[in-house]
Every structure is written in structure tokens, then in C-alpha cells.
View 1 (cartoon, rainbow, N blue to C red):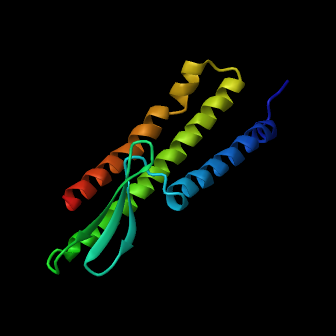
View 2 (tube, rainbow, N blue to C red; view 1 turned 45 degrees about the horizontal axis):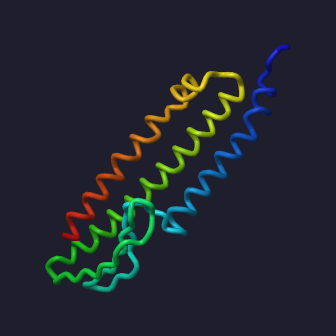
View 3 (cartoon, one colour; view 1 turned 180 degrees about the vertical axis):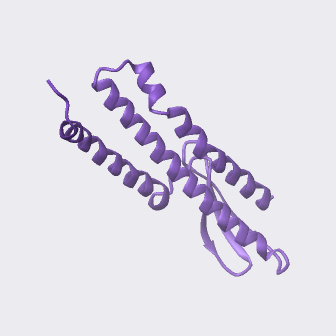
Amino acid sequence: MKITFTNKLKAFIPYFFVMIALCCLSYLLVYKAAFLPNGYEIKSGQKNELTITSFSLIGKEKTIQTIDYSKQDEWKLEEIEVAVKMQKDASWLLYTALGISFTLIIMRVRNGMHVRKAISQSNLIFAILIPLVPLVSAWNRIQSLIA
């Protein structure tokens, strides 16, 4: 049987919609449900005061800190807000990349490829490492600004 482009496209479309659904789910997890393992979220912010929630490794709320800065250190509040946004963006990218990589692994295994080869071709390692670098950088930046 000859495999044509339309047959390949018909086989890929369900996986494509699963990947789109995983992107939306990861967005909802990060931005709406605030699932940020080992991360931070800004609860409220006034002129010289910021209330930050930190989360544990499993995503549960750990502590709530209210940070007061003087007029001279007001730039730190803005930097914390930027770092928290960067952390959320990196978390969203991490969850999306993992979801897409796992979908590619499942798709390739179902098509008869060995699991090890499917894992290596899905670029799972890059899906973890690339978003993890800015995520760890954001965590370190937030911790240094809070301290």
C-alpha cells in the first residue's frame, strides 16, 4: 500500500489536536490555577508593598510574604514582577514542551517504533532542559530580590 501525504495528514491530525489541547491545559495550569511547583506568585501589589505566595515542590502554597521597600528600592518591586512573569512563561513552556514530547512518543510507539528510539526522536531532553534554564534563573532572581 502506498502511503500518501493525505494519509499521513489524516493520521497526524488527531495528535495535532491533542497537542493544541495540551498547550491550552498547560496555560490554564500556570496562569489560571497557579500550579507553580517551587515557584512564586504575586497576590497583591501596592506602591511600596508586594505580597508574594511561594509554593512547595508539589505545588501547594507554602508561605505568604509581604515585602515592603523604601522609595529608593522601588525598582526591586518591578524586578520581582518581571521575574515572576518570566517564571510563569518558562513554566508554561516547560509543561507545553513536555506534553508535546510525550504525545510524539506515544504517536511513534503506536506506529511501531521502539520506545528508546521514540524517546530520542521526540527530543524529550531538550523539552526539559531548554525551558528549565530560564525557570531556574527566574527562581534565583526572585530569591535574591526577596532576601
